[in-house]
Image (tube, rainbow, N blue to C red; front, side, top):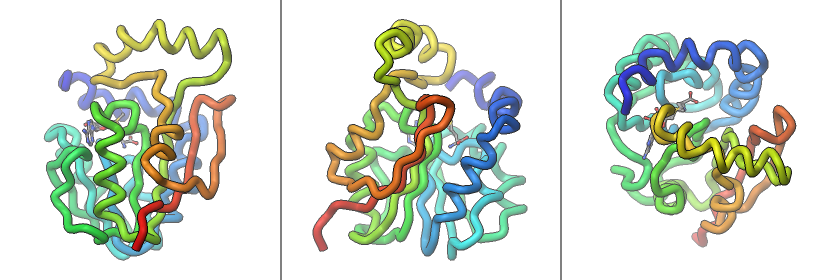
Length: 199
Ligand SMILES: C[S@@+](CC[C@H](N)C(=O)[O-])C[C@H]1O[C@@H](n2cnc3c(N)ncnc32)[C@H](O)[C@@H]1O
């Protein structure tokens, strides 16, 4: 990862956080219960919003991001551990977690299908998955602009792709969408989904 991205991540996010992203995070993350897996926790922007979780085990492959999340981890209302792992190979037993949370991560994960398969494996059959992602719009012009901008954006922003169709991939991997909300004219979505796997 470009070191500048982790160094300036919170500063870059601040205008968006002030314009409503905090409330979206709070509403989503406060729904996490039981033993929670957070995927790609970055600088820990979600950590203040865990209220009902028993404990949170967060994975984050980038050491600078992990280290920047430590103050928020310490100030959290619930116990949080942050581990070094990517989402495509999770170091956990099957059927371990009650909730999985991922925010602004599936735009960057190199193999999102594999990551969803792993989340399904480590989550209980009745677990919920809470997602906040930016996605490709169906709009004929804006969607094309997202496609054109993505190669440059991806190089500058640590692998982030603006034109992912994360909700579709989630459903292809067997998750059942229970609740879907759109934000900023559909550029961002929040989803609550059930793990579709059999007991
Ligand atoms: C845009 S940041 C989002 C951070 C945080 N979730 C948030 O909402 O602010 C994307 C994060 O995904 C992490 N990431 C990249 N590849 C990943 C992977 N394969 N598995 C898990 N996390 C990954 C990055 O290191 C980075 O911290």
